[in-house]
Length: 102
Image 1 (cartoon, one colour):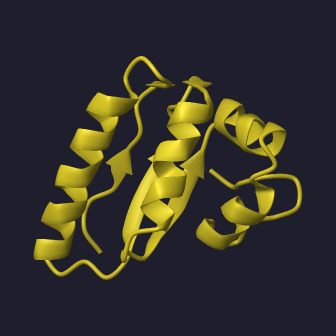
Image 2: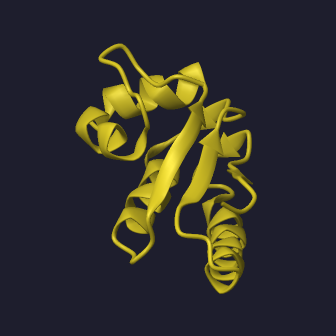
Image 3: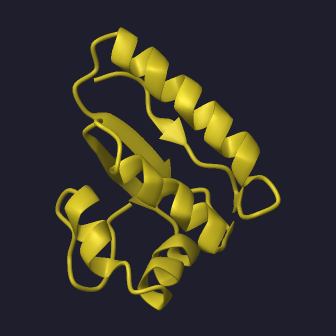
């Protein structure tokens, strides 16, 4: 496994384009290095909106195996509010009904 990608503290419409570009470059580098599973952390996310969640949902449609390895309370709450609990369960190892383990 390669290095972990840390999502920014503000994962929102104001910086999602920059985050997308950085994330896609990281995915390409990890793939070139032969990483089979990509690790993405939302541990530091303090603010998230639909655009930020949409970015990760789009990653789910790519041909990369990834998992969410950490989640802040704000990120988890946003996923719950948007009805993304089943989606989170697919990408979080050892998820539990009350949320993500950090």
